Amino acid sequence: MNRPYNFSAGPAAIPEEVLQTAAAEMLDWHGSGMSVMEMSHRGKEFIAICEQAETDLRELLAIPGEFKVLFMQGGGVAENAIVPLNLSRAGTVDFVLTGSWSQKSRKEALKYAAEVHVAASAEASGFTTVPDPASWQLSRGASYVHICSNETIHGVEFHELPDLKSLGSDAPLVVDFSSHVASRTVDWSRVGLAFGGAQKNLGPAGVTLVVVREDLIGHALPICPSAFDYKNVAEADSRYNTPPTWGIYVAGLTFQWLKRQREGQLAGIAAVEARNTAKARLLYDFIDASGFYLNKVAPHCRSRMNVPFLLADDALNEAFLAGARERGLLQLKGHKSVGGMRASIYNAMPTAGVQALVDYMAAFERERA
Ligand code: PMP
Image 1 (cartoon, rainbow, N blue to C red):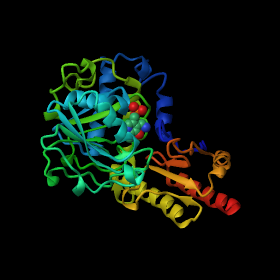
Image 2: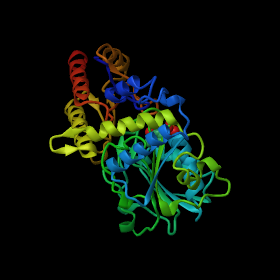
Image 3: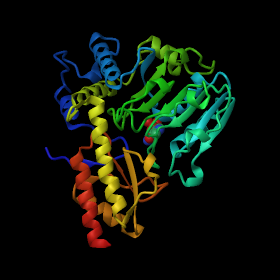
């Protein structure tokens, strides 16, 4: 089937093979006589699905044994509260502001943490860069340091996670990796906790992935809701209450799809990362070479997942979007806070989709410039 290319920032494209498997298994999962949506979350069928999903994810992302993998609900926005409710015991939490999502996280933390400190901010640049970690003003004895490692709206990505130890801080690093989880390898030695909603790179909306180092569990504030206390969720293997069963199942199919990916000698996440890097280069190189399209983000921190770009004349935006839709290039409108366009090119976007976009952009420029 020839489906259009979907550039949505999320909920986003899901690999077609995953959708086909989910469709084929919709009425009867593996001879159980039930759809996954109809199964008890405490039955052996769903427990097997959930355990397999965790095993596959651990293998894919090389998650060390001292980390717990939790499948929760509430998305990244709920984690903005759940993280300080679980981790802010010592009082001060540090934030590095690199765009809308880290700003939003900081605002929410103000409700729960005794003190919220901005260690660095790229606001003066219009959120077009990541402040150099050597310049961060980290608090002594902070409960954690929060970063958003890929800013979905501003298109800014940490190409490398900061090493807080080398910056003189013992605080755990909390990473919102919602919009580039599973797009590249993770250096877990630098991470205390990472969270992200599934709806960009992992599957359908409704599941939130939390990967948390064991020593950070069990310190929730007394007001933390029981269903959001990492200790309860970890002890019950993500089944403290009814988890988003369908979402976990489709995420599990996506993990299997990711494991099957190959690029030359590379397999799994390494293959996907190489492909993502090449896809992003194709699009940024085209934008930079054109005088008609513009991306303002500093090249060393451009997102490989979310590529915002402006047209030389915004009066052409509607015509650009209409022409794109006609060619089967969907959901390219930029976020209203930055305007212009945004091409989200997550794992499920094939290189051919990015090439089709570049071909269209070139044709539009020839016609309208
Ligand atoms: N963080 C980032 C980086 C995001 O991109 C998003 C969603 N676009 C969120 C957090 C919020 O996720 P949710 O809508 O699932 O709560």
